[in-house]
Length: 449
Image (cartoon, rainbow, N blue to C red; front, side):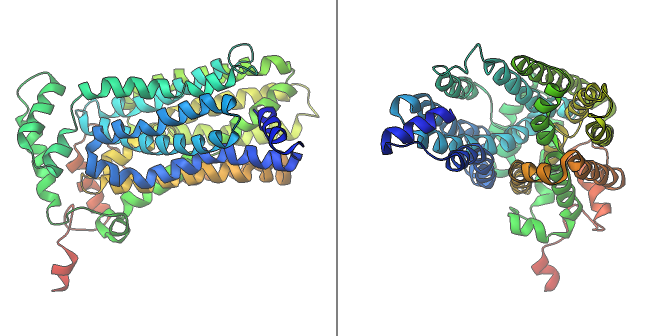
């Protein structure tokens, strides 16, 4: 792709671009994706409140199909600008879907399956990464002719969703609480559960609606001002920040160098990388089944502890790799251990918790905050890690180890277990932590009066 950028520049100007300019163009192309994710996170509240959860996801497919066509045609059109713009649009799609999908599934799910179903989006993200790694193998689609096809394939899942999602019901909570359409909500619940006896769940949603009437819709600024949501908000910021700043992108970034030092042939590194992706899929698949057995809190603590240990040992292994011949193999073990730990808790659980610890009126704004922290952290690590690596070398992973440790301590002290609890029960737990008398206290203006 860099060669395409250079040849396109030559065709326009009659001279090749400089190395620094080419690096800048490539960096912009890469960083447009997390920047688009940040923009998409800011659009979540607008989309879900006006279009509904299902409607937001259907509309969001525009931001995947259009750029897929643009990227697929970029080589023919001799335009690298099409790739840069498309990366931004695909990032917006990812920013919206990574927030709306957990929200939608969390609101559809019965409480006894909410954790397992909430982890499924992360499972399919890991499957998507693995598919990309397999298709990205040199002999398949990353040839000089094949890369536009590889980029264009991103529109295929969106096209499938556009065809199949209309067959699914809208979120019953959205229909009842926000649209006030009891008949549609009851019908959606019956379709989802497969039986007519949904009165108990309807009553639970009504209770949530009654509890929120005093507050109304909660915007992002209001979310930061409300004492009754104080610890929920801090928890989401810590968990989303910890998820990205714990070094997961840096580990993948460093992995190829570690494989090469361990004696893996350069042409075989791509297969080992795909193996890492396969481990990620397997462990996330396991998380789907154990999240309801062990609970969210245990998986988060276990995952961050494994990541902390892996970062510490990896630092020592990298420092000693030129002194002790078998140290590169320890580094490989650390990478796989880190991937396993992150796949169990830090990757899938934070988005699930946003659905669980916020009620209907504050949930869209909470996802906007969580998504913003997620994508800005992702963007920051991608931007500054090369400089950290140049400055600290092997010791750069100590920073990630410290972040993992601090996040673990916070989870242990603050984050409660939410397994098998209704949204109202979870919010009553946080009401005690926030030292308020109820889930939502009376309106501030009435208190002043």
